Image (cartoon, rainbow over all chains, first blue to last red; front, top):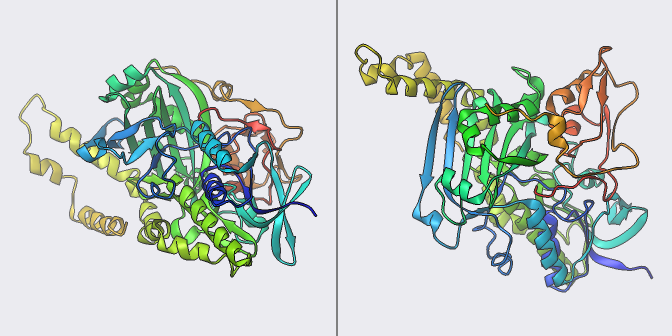
Length: 429
Length: 94
């Protein structure tokens, strides 16, 4: 009799790790397959992780986790061609423990969590690519990986944003460009004392900044910057549809090079040394773009299911990955107790997700993708705001115009009406 | 102004492990397909180039396995797999 696992988890990113850890903790036999050299070796984040929604799902993990910095400073920059408006936020709640969010680097973070999962009894096999699902009588019975046939009661597909597993199981079709963004970033090493000095931080405090406008040349997306312990994560996210169709055709890598050249950015990274360049697709289609979450003998979690969300001020994915992995595991634990691994037996996954912050967030922000599709947000408004600021602050050789008319000259009746309409869309977020 | 690091130099910072076969291939006869030209713009590693004959060529070395070309161009023009286990890019930071 060949060995049959309770669950095979495909992919040791945060969804897969969350699922495997939870299953092993309850004593189930779980095989975790990772195609990279080690968990985290194929993963990319912006990035930061928000702990509040997931703190209680993995209470033992956080105390020693290899975080970079806890974020105490939030920033948004509206970038016009030659100028920018920056808003910086600090609040005592960000400086008080337990901290809300941390910058992280996935190669370190995922690898560390995988060690904790192995301690719980997870059988982790790295350098193992899953080639196909074993499907018999319409039921997923396991996977083929590197010539091996591996069987399980359930397969949990945590194979990332493209999820070839969910495609093979007929739970989704290849994604369409309008529902995905691509992020690409550099890790720029910089002395930690210098980082603290430049960003006004102390100790392990960190800064997070988002940039919109010129950085994507009017395309849907933005720039981001996170401080790590002794490096800076600097990158750009752009909607794939905008990138391939224009207007203003530009090769993706050029956007990041230009972003780095901006004086606002250049002085923050000056003297730093780029040590890695990475890129990844990000699900940005929201509620309507989620895949089917379960089938006979299979569950889908994390980016594979589409659990990542951009609402402009926050861009989140890793909490949804860990939480959906956790709930997938809970569903398998319940299915095992009833010895029913059919689609009906696994249906509690969707029910639990539905009651959790994951689906509630996706429902609350179901209008966000459409509201953020408005191109005026990425080109027209940043230029307008830049021009208003320039005129307000400028002191010419002669007399200075009155302030209100200075602003008002940009705002004709037609303009105000267009703004009102844009505002109504944004207010749906 | 700080100097701009070329894309090749940037990719040279990453750890790549060689695969026996390219994991992404342009399907035969699709080299001039308009859908394929999107890859020239969207690939963050700049691995797709259009030659003088209007054909798009792919250099697989330096692939970050991000998935953008699969979404932008589709599987009718690209044969798209992940590299075999243990091959391809291995991020040290991520």
